[in-house]
Image 1 (cartoon, rainbow, N blue to C red):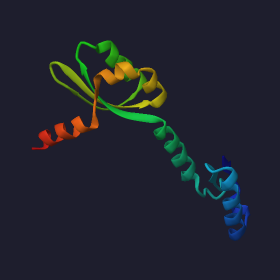
Image 2 (cartoon, rainbow, N blue to C red):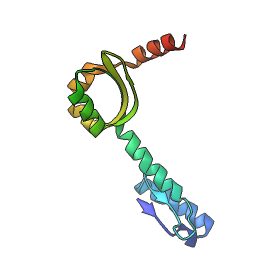
Image 3 (cartoon, one colour):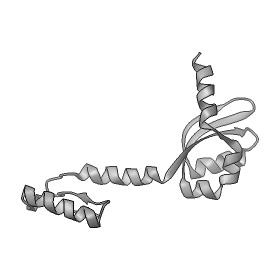
Image 4 (cartoon, one colour):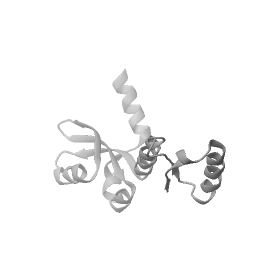
Length: 125
């Protein structure tokens, strides 16, 4: 919920109203479009919603699974990708809903965070 025209309220009244409205609308944003006040809050809030609705995972996929890799490119945000002769390692951000729908196939190739840390230690040595 976005409440506009906060510039029309005296500061104390604005603070009181904001506190009261947050009880009924906890995910609200208070702006003044005219004075361009708190417009960044809208963008930040939308970004938080989008990012909280996504899962970041690491996958190690056999190179011959090109159809699956192509599916990931079409349906997820690829953050990092590495190749070798046998595997493609991908770090990606995927919607939680899609992650749950494709859980079995994704889980088959998923690298656990603990494995990632130990591999990173080896690379850093």
